[in-house]
Length: 430
Image (tube, rainbow, N blue to C red; front, side):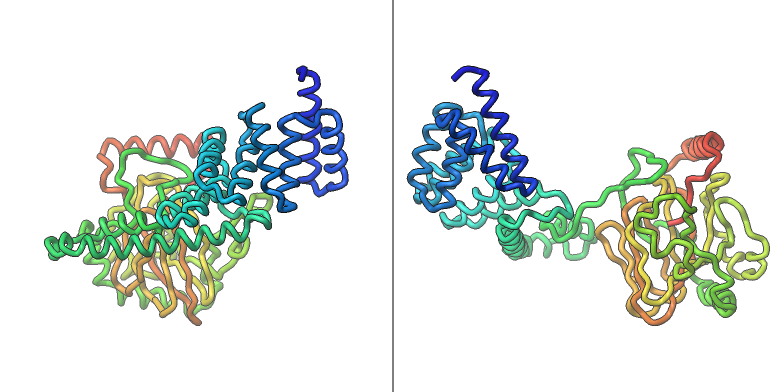
C-alpha cells in the first residue's frame, strides 16, 4: 500500500471516529464503508471490521482479522485492545494478558486496558493483583469525570474491589503490627497513624497551597501541638471573659457584624457564592490586617488584656488580625486555603454547639470551648455548623515559629513591597 492510500484511509477512519463521538452515527458508518471499499486489508479497516464482529458475538472471526492487522502494523494500541477482547471471549487468558501488556507498552495511560487487566486477574483468582490494576486505572480518571455509559458499571466494580482490598490490607496490618504497637504503647503514635491512614487510602494527601507566598522548607504540619505554644495558657484562662464580651456584641444582632466574605462585583466567586456579602459568616474585628480598631477594642477590654500575650504576625498592611468569627446555624464554610505558610492560625473556641465540624487537610478536630487549636491554613480546610444556633471562635494569626528573626524581617519587607507594587493586600484570614 502506498503512502497516499495509507494517509487517505487514516483520514477516513479518524473522521469516522470523530463523527461517532459527536453522535453522527450515519456519517460514521458512511466513512467506514468508504474506507472498507478503498482498502479492505488496511490494519485500521480490519480493526473496525473486527470490532463490529466482536459486537455481533463473532469472536473467532474477529480474532483472525486482528491477528492479521497486528502482523501488518503492531503500533496501534486499539488493535491490541480489540485483540485482547477477542481473546477474552475465546478464553485464551495467557494470550489476552500478552495483548494487554502490549497495549500498555504502547499507551501506559490506557484506562480500558488497565480495567481489563484487573478483570483478568479476578478471573484467575488473584484479587490483590486485580486491586492493584484497578487502582492504577482509577488513578487515571480525572476527579469529577463521569465515565461513558459502557464503562460506568466496570469503573464502579473496580472501586468496590479496591475498597475491599484496602479493608483486607487494613485487617492484615492490624494483626501484623500488634506486637510492634505493644512495644511502644506509651509513646505518641499519631503521626504514624496518619501515615497508615493515607497508605490505606482512608485519608487523602493534602499539601500546603498558599494563595500568595510559599516559604520553602517549613515542616508541612496541619495541626501543631498545643503544648508548643505555652503563651496560650493565659488566653485560654480568659475564655469566660472573652466569651462574655463576644456575647455582648452578638446581643445587638447581626448588624454589629460584617460579612467575612466580601468579593467585589466582577470577580469570580468560585465556592464563595453562597457566603459572599452574607452575615451567615459574620465577623467582628479587633485587629484587621495590621490595623487596630479602637472602638471595637474598647468594647472588649478584657479580651484585649488577654491578648497581651499574643505573639502577633506583625506584617504591615497584612497582620496581625484578631477577629471574632461567628458561623450561623446550618451554614458551611467551603474548602479553601490561606495566603501564606509564614504564619499560623489560632482558634480559641468560645461558643460550640453540637454538630460543628472542622477539618484541616485530612484531619478533623473537635472544637472544645477554651481549648485552642493551632493550624496551618494553607492546607485545604473547611468548617460547618449543622446545629440550630451560631458557632463562635476567636481567630488570631501568629508567626510560623520555624522562621528566624532575619527571615521574618525579610518576609515583612517583601510582603509590603508586593502590596505596594500592586496597591492591594493579598491577606484575608483563615
